[in-house]
Amino acid sequence: MSSRRIAFLGLGVMGFPMAAHLLKAGHEVTVYNRTASKAAQWVERHGGKSAPTPAVAAKGQDIVFACVGNDDDLRQVTIGQDGAFSAMSEGAIFVDHTTASADVARELAAAASGLGLGFVDAPVSGGQAGAENGVLTIMCGGSEADYAATEPVMAVYARSVRRLGPVGSGQLTKMVNQICIAGLVQALSEGVAFAQKAGLDVEAVLDVISKGAAGSWQMENRGKTMNAGKFDFGFAVDWMRKDLGICLAEARNNGAQLPVTSLVDQFYADVQAMGGNRWDTSSLVARLKRS
Image 1 (tube, rainbow, N blue to C red):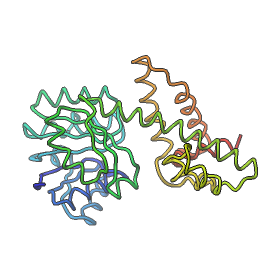
Image 2: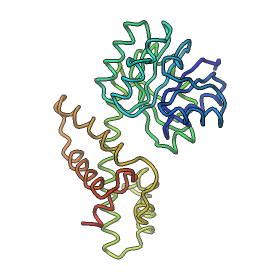
Image 3: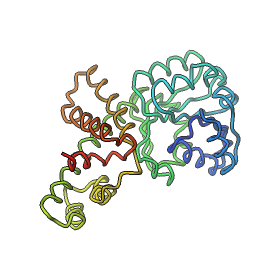
Image 4: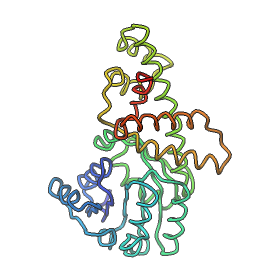
């Protein structure tokens, strides 16, 4: 794969390692972060360059990636003051790894198209560990041409990259992902709490049932820490509630019924009320222990 000129906007727990993988793959990488010291830290650790604004970072780049917090953050780095779109060259492509709404993906894709830019919505799954180890799953929406041009670049930090349809399809697929995770984590929490109440050896129980139909990524990676009451890592409850809010809003628009997702969202609100805003999503079990 030939070297590409790349900007990466947003150096949180996901973006920081993802941008590093791009540099290690031989691409020319310029980074931007709202907190400039984080960008300086990235350059000090990995090399590359940093820029003071999204526009400066995006100027002259072939592809501009972003991984920020929410819809409003995404608008700010694209069409806000000193946003990337104002400086990108015609034919350049913007790839958004933020978990955001399908509506904002379509909105920004239309704005990009009017400027002669490509746009791919490409939310990711796999968490911080997946980003650090380069084994993320990436769900994409966009034109076949834009996807084909960016897929080999995204592949440097992914185990699986797939186009699901036009712009917005990536975000809709990520919603399905979060809906499924919410139900799995609640069921696992109930199972762990039940095993504890029953006086069972919880780790032994998880070891045996993980080999059968109940097995899942959540069980393999979060079962033991749930049992130990350790939640100071992983995907934060605040982020999950943001994501589930997007899912529930989309369901209101398309008529889908999400009774379990709605209930689990309220359970996460209970965890927040317990002070668990930054706990890992597996902290749902703490709510059961308290009640």
